[in-house]
Length: 200
Image 1 (cartoon, rainbow, N blue to C red):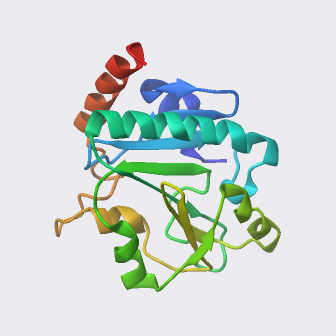
Image 2: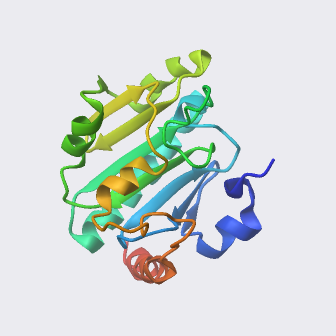
């Protein structure tokens, strides 16, 4: 299996911020905005909708810590998103890697309105576990979360790195983590995490 998030030595170890029993917290590659984190499952689950029920409390605890860090250090709101990828024909729901990774961005932008301008209104849910009914149907989706507001769009077909494209305001390809890893922003975040973590 050629999955970067399953390759601890090359993709996780050098940027690991925190590790729990079932998850890693790492800065995201391609951080054109410095405050960009990923919660990645240790085991190869396709998406949040594939996660065992017992792992959700642990993921939420790590999520809360990540949000507290981003809000405290970058003094912004935090949005979260996931491209829940199941290959349905050519539909990967905009995801690049079919391995559970929840993105967290420090931004004050009204990203939900931007998504709705492109995709229309999504379906509201109350908690991550509400996505589990999509697993049996093998439905791909886009998930957006801010505070307690959670919305998802099932069976969509959007460009790869869809949310990153919305947040990136330039006309070049600087949003693309493969071409532009923005390692200087990852390094800056790691340094800020280390200082924050010593005091929290």
